[in-house]
Length: 149
Image (cartoon, rainbow, N blue to C red; front, side, top):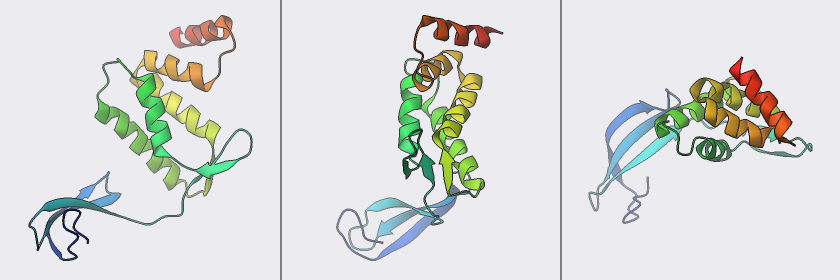
């Protein structure tokens, strides 16, 4: 592994442990030239999951897009960042376990909304208002009423 500090190609592994719910191995390494320590992750190489958009386009699955949407929805809410990251990890793992090469964006959106509904109702309504493109106040109120039931 190339040292990020000096570029030397030789290092030693100091510590290895499971990471990301067993999906990766985290290794602490020390450069043999400059003694700087750095972390690497080893994961299984998989074929990329493609997301089928509403207009039929296909694009690679992006956990960053989901994470950014969740961060916007949970902004100023009492939700720890690790809960949000865990939600994205769980969603990504479930999608990968299905063994499919493609997934519809609507399925991802519905799964995110279901998780948010359990996590925080305000964040759920925020996410739903963007995801479902409420056209007027009546649609928004209808969603709130169903949430209150």
